[in-house]
Amino acid sequence: MGLCCSPVIAQSRPSEQPDVNDAHFHLTNYIQEGTDLHDFVRIMGNKVGRVALFGIPLQQQWSYANSGDSAPTYYLQTDSPLYYYSFTDAYIAMAYRSLTKEEQARFEPMITGFNPTDMYAADHIRRVLQTFPGVFSGIGEFTIHKEFVSSKIAGETADLQNRALDKVLDFAAEVGLVVIIHNDMDVPFPKQGAPPAYLDQMKALLKRHPDTTIIWAHTGLGRIVRPIKDHAANLAVILSDPTLKNVYFDISWDEVAKYVVASPEATKITADLINRFPDRFLFGTDEVAPTSQQSYLKIFYQYEPLWNLLSPEASEKVRKGNFARLFDEARPKVRAWENTHARGE
Image (cartoon, rainbow, N blue to C red; front, side, top):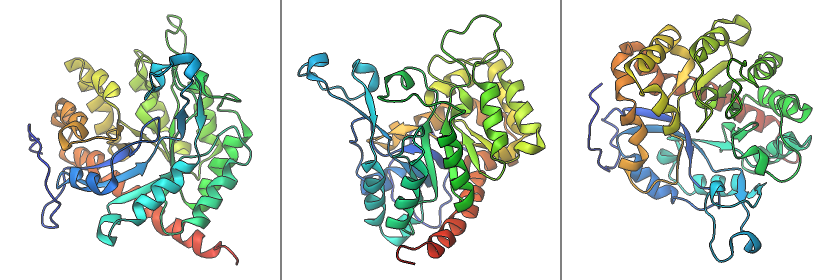
């Protein structure tokens, strides 16, 4: 594949083939600040072809009583709560609309600004599609169980058995939207030998929605939610189940990459799994508001030991092909739904 060690920023030229598509990218951070989208196109350069584009659906509260004049920019910098921030969808839509048609073709904007415990969440998604037709291709990344985050969100705690979540996933199937969901497979610091806390519930959720295209972010891992001994085997069970053929995994986030490349054995286990199921994995950066191509693509280069162990076919699919297939299938379905359900008709 020819991985370069010193990426540079360059404008994309049609004659050059990109190295990768990015299935998981946050334009903005936890205080809704980020990279100007026009600058980000330049950061993508020739290296990145297409990107799933979203903000972050949560806003970190700045509580003067908690942190005084020190303004938190990340959820680990304060004990103050997070809250759902619906304006993120309008912001992403307007940023996307400011691009040229050629630039727009490189992005798949995603709806994230909804509360997955709210039975009205699906109605929010419907309104966004009707307000910004021609923009969005999916929903997510949104969070159910996430270490250090779930407990900070104001209001009802999200869970995998909530009927509001089922309603969202049913609506995604109706429209044809791709879904990216963050759900830790386990709790931090689990009891030794205990099965992953949320694996069975997650599998049950996936089985309830066989017609929804679902990407399980980070393969269920987290910052300290580490891969257990049987993590690859648990993924293989899902990937081998014919009733779960709609389920995919992204390998985004440098916290996940560190597990994959931690040892030759870990890298080989991951590569063997992906080579066995090459159609079911997507690369993503999970970068937040990057300022340079080098910082944006650091995880891509971090995965070099993995790329070296993948078959050429698997490498191509994980880096680019699976992204193109899923979103090329989704986009016309969503546009058709929008045309049928246009406002005032």
